[in-house]
Image 1 (cartoon, rainbow, N blue to C red):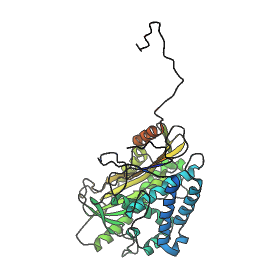
Image 2: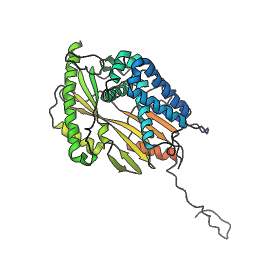
Image 3: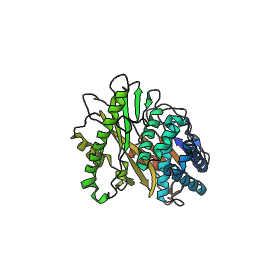
Image 4: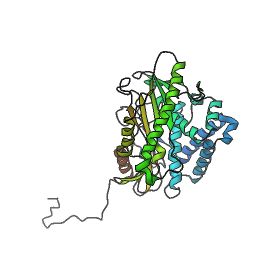
Length: 398
């Protein structure tokens, strides 16, 4: 139920499960709750507090962790502006807010914290102090892989008790010197599954001009290289665990390869990999390869949608591929991704006023419909029309 009070800011958290959150639930669920009302300053302050808590937990090493320090500095600058607006903020700032909010949603969910207001719960659920500080201190690649794993972990937490993480293996060193896979997952309809999350990065000389001809093949080769690494991680993890063999799922985030890919969509612009062309090509190339030791591969990527020249939504899509059909005919671990939407509440307004979070990836049709309905862009206005008047005194329309 929407509140008609003239409040400055509305947070609407869309989710398919209760998990203790106040939310408005859309889709297949029958649960419906009221949305929360807060100010943008309150939201950003809660984000600062959450990252401050993470910094305090990590301890002295936090001063050397760029991810935490840069995030805090950005949020402090943003809070001083009082709002997020296409007039007062650059596109880079708006993009950074979307990404930080999604990262934090994963951290909060993974720790069983609160979305309204944003606060981290049991931080030990994402790792011991020494483990997190050690991993985040090793470089951006490790940070990106960790965030990728936290987003998955948060998504799983929001589906408890039907799905749960039985073992966190992210910080266990394997017998060959590297890490074991990230998690063991179990569920009511999901067999014991080992999961590894990886995020790919373009070569420093990557150019979008060569994308269609060269880079899709490069992405496929890098995925295959990561499959080989993941197989060793799965082998080592499985050898140390009891209760027999597990299903093996590798999640590979290829978002960074779509950062320079711009295409026009109906009434707007999309930046990111296109599922019907580029993702489909990568999947068809992978289907030709013989991949051993992995049962399910999940491609993940981010698409950003622009309307009226400004970012309005960040969608984290996922696409599963069953590699070994004899062991996994129908993939049971249905990772559905995330969606962050942020809109003004009227036609022609510059301030972002309604924030939406969903633990499933929304289609472009959904995003477009949300944009139109929340900003009154479905309505058109013209000049005043005078009703015709006849001499009989009957002014009814014929």
